[in-house]
Image (tube, rainbow, N blue to C red; front, side, top):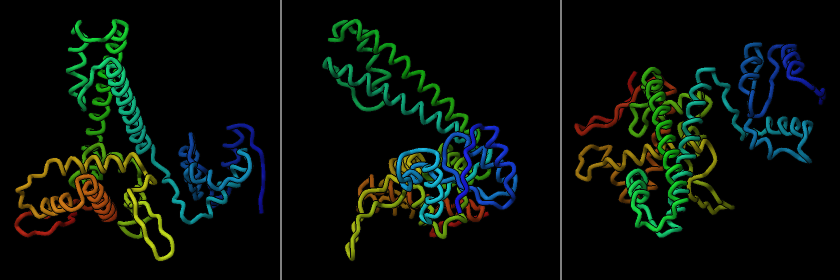
Length: 326
């Protein structure tokens, strides 16, 4: 049975939700305000499922309007393959806001960096990779009158360099806040016992508020964050490709960055069993694939830690196995 009612104001929608009887299942798609409405409904005793808007759109037929959007949400709600987005606490949303602001600064800083490199390259000035080349070489280029860079362009690049530095300062400030938050949160502190998970990644995992019991095993948990190979299979032929772009791309990238940091710090002569395993992975798979494999392994460990409120102790050189402890 379909019941349709057009609600024309936020106040009317609030009143409509307030009058819903308890235990009614409410479906909605992600978007501004969805978390606030969901918390209100939960406080009333309703069960809320927030569905990813991108996956809901795949169930829409016909032109985009309120009626077709509502029907698409209903169809998506019956799709067993769509995982609902967790309803988050106010604290988790604040943590998520810090991460999104920091991510925005990182993207803008990268864009400004690429813009300066491109402008200078047009005039025959090439820069090495990395931030050091920008922070050290660009000022020297701007001060050197013999460089083939017009005056107007020097002024523009000087302004872009100032913006790049300011964005770096903002990133450092937000990173510091996340480090403080990680050290004050017991769950984040337990997650940081895993190699490759630092304060930024730990707080990103905490902000997700992903319930581990939603997943039957650690493999499904890792797949939720996109740490599985893309599949192009037909019949009896199974083809696995690169890592899928589905899942939480931001958190997945943080996990892979952390894994790369671990691999870069490995000593070739290390006798630690865990180090030897990682060295074998790099030798057999290459650094990139080894980093992805380590990120996948770390997410599986995270699932166990969240499931049982434990900390992680990696395998040592005296033959003691890796353990989980309370």
